[in-house]
Length: 169
Length: 201
Image 1 (spheres, rainbow over the protein chains, first blue to last red):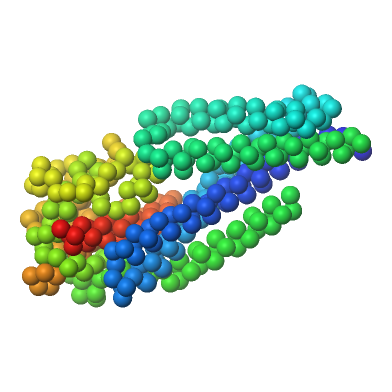
Image 2 (image 1 turned 90 degrees about the vertical axis):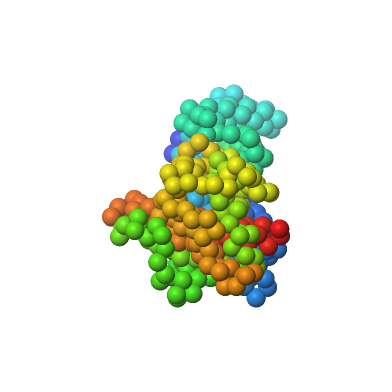
């Protein structure tokens, strides 16, 4: 029986999970943007002229978010594949006896270090365009994606540990 | 992992459905949202700046206020002025550093041709090409035009020429995929924002 998870499997799983996470987040963003703008439209437009703009605004918003999330999914799948390989290797090296708590700790550290590196890369690419001036910017681009990333990596770490344990038995 | 794969598959199907509905029903409607056939055909001051490689939209909204009450909000348009009266929270997601003024600010009430107007924080700008008090305001080929119905009712007509898209596939992809729907959202938001402010005061 093959006791290890191959790099290819780890990369594919990481990429797929990253794409799913981006899509899940895109639904949240889509819903938030549609609801917030629709509330604003409803308070301004008379009821007779409201429905056209509500539909047009809602679908345009959904379409733009869908296109943007497809682009983000491509980029995130690369990051996901890399983190998948790193996480599997680190877990294999540092947690040979498959302890649950250790798996959580190692996955958390891997997630935090990866986040730090990703943000460093973003900072080098975008420099002063990165701004925490507005709550929206901070939450949308940094806080919520970081939280999702952290949770996904920790859950994946635990699952990978369980898989490796099962293969060893 | 199978559930995750299924989620991705259904998301693709959902997105494809949204794209289809957008292209069949929404885009044809939003390109001329609110504008009558006459308004779509009417000549605008900056039309001469619009080249053939651009997609032109003409949108309009009725405002229960006189031109004079609407104009001050238009005159102070710009990120480096009174904002765009649109969804600032959406603009700021893209680091536009936008603040919409809640009042009329005197120092921004005399826009002049060749004044610089920023779209976002420190980058992306356009020069005012044509301006006439209480009548029209053009940034490049983008025109905000006021047409009186009577003393208390005005039509705000907005004509926007896209970037040059017809000759480059990459530009088409960017424009149709992202820019056009987002621009419609922001422009209609701006028109409604101006309506709200002009009718309030």
